[in-house]
Image (cartoon, rainbow, N blue to C red; front, top):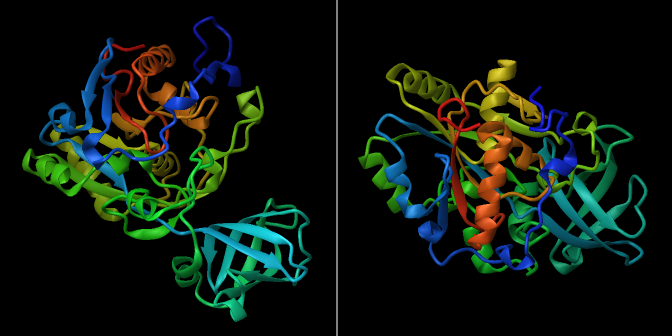
Length: 358
């Protein structure tokens, strides 16, 4: 375990910082590649734009993307009594069943019918409460939908925008809170670092000899859950499903053989690759918790957005690039008024040991 610079174990408070509210991006940049890019690969921060990214990569490097697709997982409805409720679908199970968060004044009983989007009479559908998940003490709920869940969400659902975005979802959000290469539906939050890529930038990277590969991690709502324990060892990480295809495993081996760098696009890709390396399992659920002192086995560099104070993702980037270095980069970003979080700007980081950073 790596210790704090003052010699004690890291605690939750070490990852706190003050962020002016006006720096929380409420809308995306006019163009996907129009965001700023803070180059943190050296000891001194360098201000760039995202269109500069190809110049930071080399022929033979491998960019690994998360190709999950955000589903319209937020659904509104009511109980038989007329009480309003909201579901946020976390996972789709076989047999038209789902696992969801439920926001309601009084939780309904098992077997209750929930009338979503007006119910069948109003053009919507019925959801039946089947119990808790993953067990009777679980915080989530298991429900049976009256038809195929993905089709129902596509028809009646809303884009599950993060809690810090204050407007209701629009057609712009439906288009921009999704990567251009989204392939496998299942996420309730976007892999936001990948939102900066468009087809023209991908073509330029291809022309420069930068290779590409994909993994899938279905981002869950737990990514926004605050860490509540000052002692990090007491924090229970949320569970997310991932897959590392055989072609991607081979692409990483080929990258290593030619001396290229494995560049993760987003923290979800980091968590996927390092879960695979840590467990040897190419597919399954991960609860990996990456904090300073973590031994990275796959990822050499990272493209990422700016993260919430006291978040597990602040801990992840600190583990990768160095705690003191990340603090200096965030101080610079706030002073230079970078835009934060999902619709915000990006940063380029290299893993400690690949640079002189500590």
